[in-house]
Image (cartoon, rainbow, N blue to C red):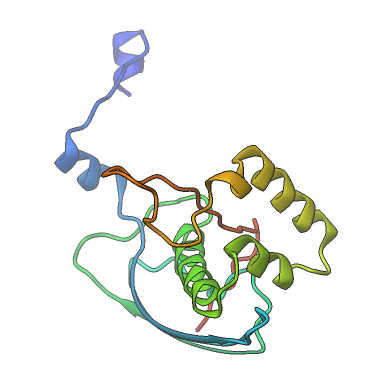
Length: 173
């Protein structure tokens, strides 16, 4: 409307408060997750209690093949306005929750997180190629630290890895 009235393009910049008031709210989650894996890296159980505000339907365990899973998901209603249209609502949050657990499981059983994920995707040639390409591009073999924070000096740097699948969203009721 402003551009039409001005007869020219209009650039709009919001401050932080204005951004939140006019652009809507992304989903937020608090989750209690318990998971188990075998010593050779097979995820055998995934149990999540998830409470989300402006819930986009966080489908966890997301992309992994889990022996047994249980999801208890509840939406928390806020007087903050609902989420507007977003691409893949709930997927970034689901990805973060699942990947944090997978990293913790890999560490607990003493496996490289890349190898841990490769075991789960053993039958998916495309996914394995994608992981190999990503590992090569980020120099995983050189930069991954078996012991987090073990790099000498006060500044620590490392590499991370996450799997995502477009369209993997499932609303849990």
